[in-house]
Amino acid sequence: MAKGKDIRITVILECTSCSVNKESRGISRYITQKNRHNTPSRLELLKFCPFCCKHMIHAEIKK
Image (cartoon, rainbow, N blue to C red):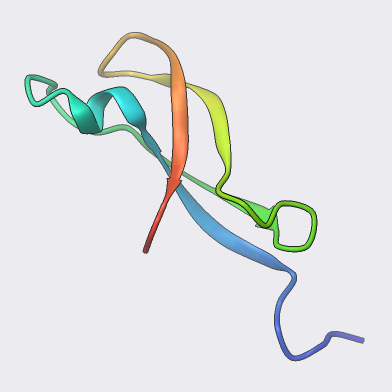
């Protein structure tokens, strides 16, 4: 049965290049889930950014 806290949580990934670069047309964001017990640190994945037109590192942000 499920415990009080959910193990899998929803996280938002944001492009690290677009958030730093002010000349960008927008900010690429992805929504995914992670297992809190297996990945306690912030999640970083290589995803496609349509504003940079290439694969960039997307890091987890606070909600």
